Image (cartoon, rainbow, N blue to C red; front, side, top):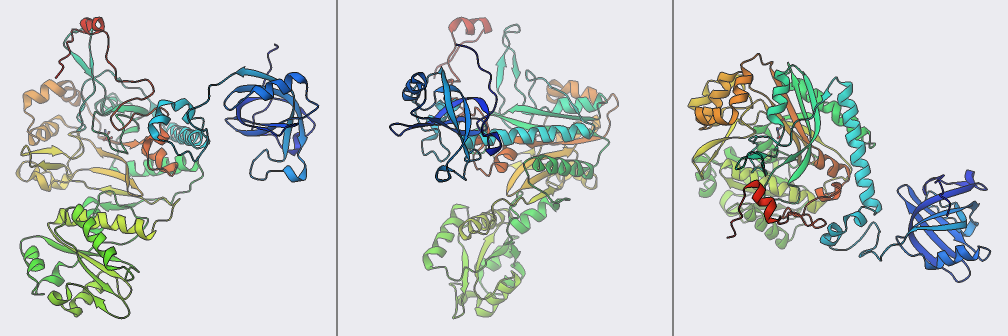
Length: 588
Ligand code: ASP
């Protein structure tokens, strides 16, 4: 059989091609045998074209058309014909034409696939992951990967134009503290020693600044051995960036430009500059350090109003340093008792002891709080929160972080329930001035909220040892639609300060030296002030795809138990491979 060359894709032929001879190649999507005539929908990456095998077709062509079935790979040669008026399909790009099959070759036959290759497939995800190459044939998955590629190319081009160098850093390396467990790789040559796969290229990108590279980026795989949730994967991709001689504002400006150019590559326009909120303000107003700003429903502090109310629970909460805060569920006075009970159950799930509520309809103000607070005070609370007749007031009392979690969580649940979120919208913001440290009750010590190379806010420097909990960091997150899309900081560029921070973290000088001696030494050879950020590329691609699962924008993802269902990894290895590495397996 002669080798044919493809002349067109299955997505491009229109009326202007009528009469021309073409060669197409692709997968058989559907075969429709109507007795005398057979239609084959031929599919490739770009679309679907209808092939016509009529009664006049050669016996060879008819024979192939009769045998062929879904997912066979075929090549066709034929003439482009205008479809009759009645058979035009305006929903398909090639719906005005069909190709009369004058010759048809089978390039490969296919087993019957375990699920249909169609967009709204209802099959369990494990099966899709087991046969990922078939899953990726579905248009929706193909479009996700195509969009992901456009985002990457858009981002890369922008950064190159801004004078960034793309530099690769090693995968076989030493542990970098980002707060997760490392994946370890045993060394055969140095038995008993291990490399760690990078949780991020943090130290290397800082070393590149010390090396004078000034502007670095990398679209890089990182590895964190965490218990995975729906929006985590053990290996994930970051757009990693580091710049010398910068302040936070410089990083914000660059990253805003980067998002604008990435998203414009997929037709989304963004407004800049992004809003900025300090961490404290974000928590106080939205109950979250990654607030979704596609809707309002801000939290209001009503502690003052509750002092002097005579209601013991609220008063004692405020007197003991806690807060009473509230949100308005706009237009929800129609809620039934059951709706309110559901919200209360949700609040308890989020950790609240109870949920105060009041429903203000045209007819009445209904609330179990009326007898404690009186109607007037409750109405005042409505007004203080920007609500009124037609609305529901939800009040939570307790310690500040708990109240934030509960109201922040309720706010999001209400928005979903009430359809306040307009799809297709992107609301970006910067959350700034994160605390430098956070305290873990469990082991009674301070941890870095970001990582230990983050610079303390110059105004708070004095409290590093005396009152670490109050020290703000020059750290920032970029947030969109309730997702943290990236985080970074201005770094410490002085080895004494770096050592001071290690000490505040309870890392002894010896330990610091053993783990990061090379880095502390490097800091002493002329380090420019520098800072950067890492953006979660998978999450960006997920939002761009309008989805909620990272697995839908990663070609070959792992399951939530970090397993690859297609290749069957991780898997056991042969004994001689282990022997070579000097490793014995302890079965418990
Ligand atoms: N290395 C940090 C991370 O992966 C990001 C940064 O500080 O640039 O979260």
